[in-house]
Length: 84
Image 1 (cartoon, one colour):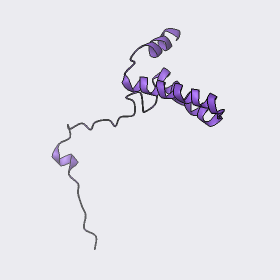
Image 2 (cartoon, helix red, strand yellow; image 1 turned 90 degrees about the horizontal axis):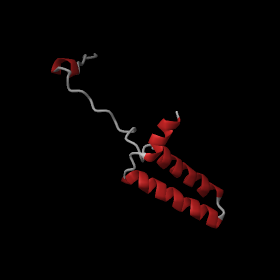
Image 3 (cartoon, rainbow, N blue to C red; image 1 turned 135 degrees about the horizontal axis):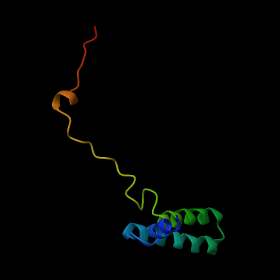
Image 4 (cartoon, rainbow, N blue to C red; image 1 turned 90 degrees about the vertical axis):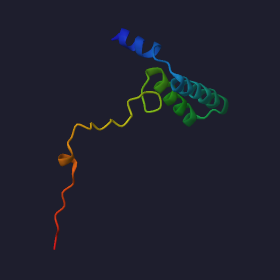
């Protein structure tokens, strides 16, 4: 369990993950500077997402899955029924 969390934290640091981490640190400094608790929670949210590589901003887990084109035209054809 510990080794998995270490690999998650210390690997795969791409540009968007650095941006989220930097934004979280910036918001943390502003929260301390202005003594604002809401900004502190927001900064903790961004830092948590960046460090754990979760969320839609830093990981690729929020992408829409591709549709497979293995279906034939007959299966994908829409059938209509006329209602009188």
